[in-house]
Image 1 (tube, helix red, strand yellow):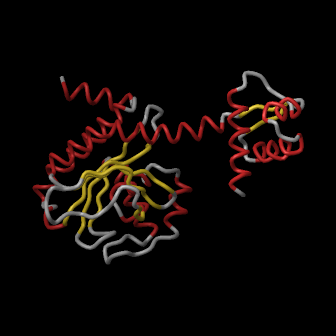
Image 2 (cartoon, helix red, strand yellow):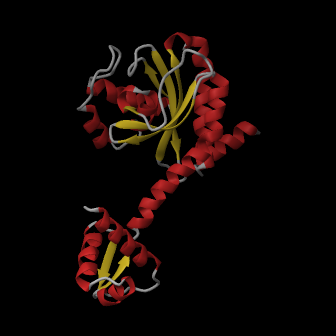
Length: 257
């Protein structure tokens, strides 16, 4: 697709989205000052991709445009809603705090607060990691449909000696994550880097992200776990409450009472 073709497609899509009534090819061609054949070709592409619909020769934009926009808006809103919780994790643990979303079999770090300590876990916003080998990834995988999880479990790669590569072991591990609400990475992505994470749930009950903490294994002592686990669990619950998750709102009110 050329730049010119893309620009024309977007221009036509914006016109369809902003016009109050369905329009035919001739009317759209006059408004855009294009040839009818050009409008027709572009409309067929938009219809084929699901961004436009036709009824009795007249065209309109579909809700697919709204769906895509909502995904972008939701991601931006998620970062702002999670920001106070991310800060609470970073302050309470003095380790690196992460907010991640799932993309296929990988997580994408969409926000992060660095540990103030000179030796710390390395990652970057926009970076990726294998979901089955990091805490935020396992917190997300645990709530996917069984069929999706089984597909991921059939293509596991080892990154350290601790990485889970047996599909049955991963499935059992994810069942434990669902039971406890907490996922743990014990040096499975990077040697000597451990992590703890919990799922973030939106108003419709969907797990949309995971929030957690990571750092050098030597600092993840039993005493640290005793502090970090409730810190992460509370951060996930508070973020979920801000996103409108009813159970999380109830839990937050109960703890504040």
